[in-house]
Amino acid sequence: MKSFRFALGFIFAVSMFGQTPPAGGRGRSMTPPPKAGVCPLPILQALPAASDTAFWASTSVPHGTVEKIPYKNYAGEEKRMHVYLPPGYAASDTARFPVLYLNHGGGDDDSKWTATDQRGGAAHLILDNLIAAGKAKPMIVVMPHTKCSVATPSAPGKDDACTQEYLKDIIPYIDGHYRTKATREGRALAGLSMGGFVVMNTGLPHLDTFSELYVYSSGYFPDQQKAFEDNYAEMLKDPKTNDLFRVPFYMAAGETDIALKNGQASLSVVNKYGLRNFWVLSTGGHEWMNWRRYLHQTAQVMFPTCEAAK
Image 1 (cartoon, helix red, strand yellow):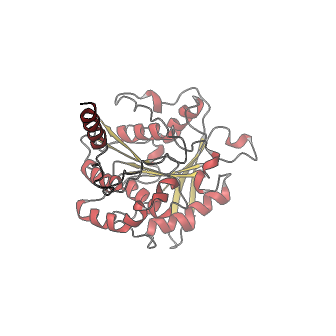
Image 2 (cartoon, rainbow, N blue to C red; image 1 turned 90 degrees about the vertical axis):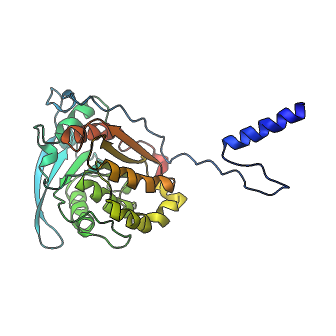
Image 3 (tube, rainbow, N blue to C red; image 1 turned 90 degrees about the horizontal axis):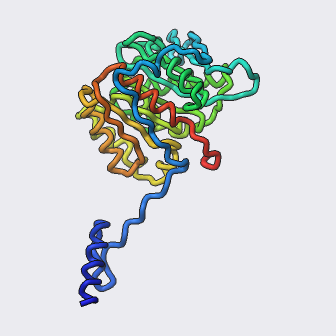
């Protein structure tokens, strides 16, 4: 009887792991468990309530500055970007800061992330308040005008126009004119809607340049999902890819978001190959109420302290 109970227990325990016991010394071996990330897994803080305006209000805390920077890109086009410098940036000649590259959506420009009405991001105020509360690292935030055709997944080695502008113009300018931590560990890339395509098209093939990717309300369209998987399958199946993310790949969308299903489909490709990720489903739809909340949440986990992971 004891032997019979032991056998049943063994079969049950093994089946809980999705395996069957080997027969005659042959059969499937146990799948090795995933290993931990290179940095301690951060805890995502809850999103502010949809009605909350306090986290993006102008309060009595030290404020950073926002500069409007004109530049000419590699194609000879006159462009502009907004650059947020955190409180205390000017107080030191030696302190260096990580950089968040933050992308707007289609139909907008580089000014929308710092607009302070209901249809703007108030990014500088969100960062001011978080930094003052000790909830976010002091960081530079670069908000370029990245409006271009970016909906099609870029194949590795075939950089689209936005990616080329980042690599040839935006990043070199920022590293050359500001006290940045000019390493991949010091760069994060985030964006909403169309800007989410920038994150995926530019960030995924250039994890030698960026170590954190945050996609707000975006995802490839149904007829592009196969190209997305075909382009990145080899990279995603490589176990070393997980180690390139200091914070898990992040995607968020509202429950009535026009991009929800596209985002879920894109995330299913990421999940298929075991890439660590955060998925956040919020109230609301494709709107600034959500994008401000996503920035507030993700800024609190950006640029973790884990020097051994460089």
